[in-house]
Length: 317
Image (cartoon, rainbow, N blue to C red):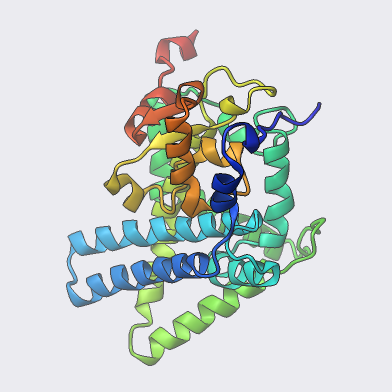
């Protein structure tokens, strides 16, 4: 099947306006990485200084959301939007974004660009994430329970490794040669050793591994649902229909949708715009009268209601 259609930005934005929107900043990408880690460290410190159930739950949610934030920044780097220097762009993404959570930019980039090329078409590798919807409320609730109890984490990350080790099989070869597992253990072992040196060895388990096994999978699922599930009238030749933008409030941006990831329709329309300029793109499209052509939902509750709109009676039939 042919690739999906693209919009010529010159038909919407003036040349000087488009140049401002697309030029990667020398400092904003590194500053966003620093901000993500500042939130992670600050949330962890909050619980260490004021240990109680409420501060722990808040810390897990904030850290899990920033782990997603690191993945979002790695995603931006896959489009070259983290830094104008390509080598520095990739290096920062690999070591400060991907390595701590076990991701690989080298493997992710070709996979993700294929998703952009064939969005919501049979060749789209991410189609499996949106195709099952709508589901029943009960089904969605069970998915969330599996996320929050670590079952999704175990199935996706732990179980494949255990099976391979127990079967004494070498890792499955990938088309892209990379070693994200090595970087993961280098970075996390260093973090554990540093924490242990100050007597806080348990922090790695309670305030890094637990968020990664619970809140991170949950918000990753919600994010993927919001981006492509149940988007109306999707066609390959209509670039305005390839994704959904969710108008997130400040709490949703803090706990679910970091770093402008909720402007996903704008990202698919203009995938080389850095994430920190997607809001400006959204406002520009609004001024120029194009928002009505897009799929825009107000808030994540509305997205969840739409994705869980299948009746149990229909399933029974």
